[in-house]
Structures are given as C-alpha cells and as structure tokens.
Length: 413
Ligand SMILES: *Cc1c(COP(=O)(O)O)cnc(C)c1O
Image (cartoon, rainbow, N blue to C red):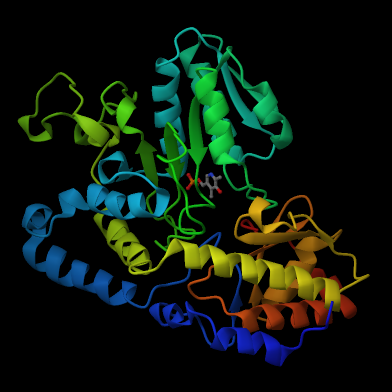
C-alpha cells in the first residue's frame, strides 16, 4: 500500500461533503477531539439558546413558560428528532431520564410481557450500567430472573424459548464491534424473545433502523454523538405494537393519563408518554435541542461513509507510522463490523492517553488497557487523524508518557 502524507489527508477534507458541518460547533483551535463518543462537542448555537431560555423564557415568563414556550412538549419534540435518526416513528420515542433509568423501565416493561420466561440474555462486552440495572431489577422482582452473559459471538446461538429478553448494546463501547441488529431481531422474533437495544454508540453515529429490523425496545444517550452536553437526558423507544400493551414500574405523574387532574390513583397515559416519570429538565433539554439541530439537513448515509473513512484512515496511518510501537488494534478492520470508533490495546494505555491529551489529542481510556478514538463526522476532519497519529507516533517514540503524572488515575478516565 502506498504511503499517505499530511497533504493527502488535507486533500480529503477539501472533497468532504460534510466539511461545512464543522462550523456548527465550537471546537477549540489546535485541539484534535476524538472523544465525541463520550461527550459530544459544544454546538455553536447552545450557549446563546441556553441564555435565551434562562433570561427570556424562565426569567421573564416564569411558570407560564411551560405552556407559552412548549417546555412541556420537549420530551416528545426532541423524541421526534431522534426518531428520524433511529428509524422509528415520531410517536415511538421520548426523551427522559438517564440511559441507566431507561434500561430499568424498559426491561421491566419487557419482562412483564414474558411471564413464563426467566432469562435476560446479554453479552460480556455490554456496558456495565446496563448489566447492573438488570441485576438490580431481577433482585427487586424476586421471581428468579437471571442475567445470563455469553460472548458477543455466542448471542445468536443462545436465543431460545427460555429467554425473555435479549438486551444488547449495538456498538461495543470498548472495541466498536457492531452487532447485526437485523439478524438478532429476526432470531429473537422467531423464538418469541423480545429485544432491548442500547444505542448509546449508535444514535447519530450511523443509520439505525429500529422499525425496519423489527426491534421491540431501545434506549440511548443524549450526550455522546447527539451533542446534548454533559449529563444530557437520554431517550427511549417502544415499538408501536407494545405501546399500549406495556407499563413501566415508575408511576410518575408525567406518565399519568391526566397529570393536572391530580387524582390519587395512577392511570397510565396512552402511548409513549407513559414512559415519562417526572418533570422534564428544561435547561438540559434546551441544550439537547441544539445538539440535535446539528443533524438538521444531514444525511446519515453521509455520516456513516465519512465515519468509516476516518476509521479506515486511522487504522492505515497507525499501521504506517506506529508499527512495532506496542499498539494492538482492538477493533474490527472491516468497517461493516465496526461502529464509529477505533481502539488500540497498549500495556500502558492509560499513561499514553494522558500524554496524548497533554499534547492536545483527546481520546479516552477504558480499562484494562484500551485507548479509544471516536469519530464524529460532523466536526472531525481527515487532517485531524493525520495530526493525531503523528502525535501518537511522537509520544510512543519518546519517554514522555512514562512521566509519573501520566499514570495518576483520575476519577473519570
Ligand atoms: C454511555 C453509556 C451509558 C451511560 O448511561 P448513563 O445512565 O447515561 O450514565 C449506558 N450504556 C451504554 C452502552 C453507554 O455507552
């Protein structure tokens, strides 16, 4: 394979049909940000919009803002935007709570539909909070539900008549490996198993087709690829066929049929609103609204094309520039099997990542030894990948990463 240089990478940016979208963000000058899979960059519109919501809406209109500014509709309004990104209908998605809580709500709803089955099937690569929520729920239910974990490759073969729900994260947060959502949904349906997909690393990163593939339930994150800001509210999806069949166990007043009737007995609202619990966090939702607006007029096919091109470029440049430097690719080389990130194992991955961050290349680290680089096609450029690999090469070649301060683990890695 021919060698690539910086000018060739810059030339790819000149031809990039998504290049215009970077202006929708405030990415600090001189920084290479490859961690939008953990926290999306700040959209340019967010600060002014938040300021207007605080000063004009809250400040001037106070309680009347709930009706006057449609605060009360935010969960559905934002849900409709996420529906477009995930292949759902507008009345199947709502924005609320955190991903963890939404796992709890939807897993409860799904288990209640499967009274004779006791197995919650997931894989060993799933994100711990999803697994913890399932364990806590099984304990709470006290009906012998059992979380069973198999390797990602073994999931399809384990789907069977004793399984109530198969709960998977489509894109593995560590390696970027992608599950075949369509195939799993097909197998599940044939065995009477319900599916619950975590789209934390999918929504906004690649086209998702929840209805086209027959998914039952899904949840996802607002602060990663959707650019909603730190701790942004999450979302959930319930397929129309289950909307009025299911209930979730957190009977909050925002899920009540008539919250402002103030009745003493709970009665769920029809449709997706019954999955709401309490008052929506309006300021956080205002920020998420700006995050979602960065996808306006953007074709997810273009996002996917560029995401894979950025990942392929990273893999190729690391092979070219950093051979023999102790890095092992931990992500699939085949783009079809991969989400929007590339990870490398390195014995001292934490320290190497801290040294990179000190030089302005921001990725992150996932224990025990993975350095993660995420690609957010709306604002990452091909030249950023060149820059990141050039700095990675320099960091690995020198002794810099061995400095003691780079081995000091922070609370968030
Ligand atoms: C980021 C992430 C979460 C986060 O859940 P929170 O409740 O928002 O903290 C959950 N699941 C997966 C797969 C994630 O990647």
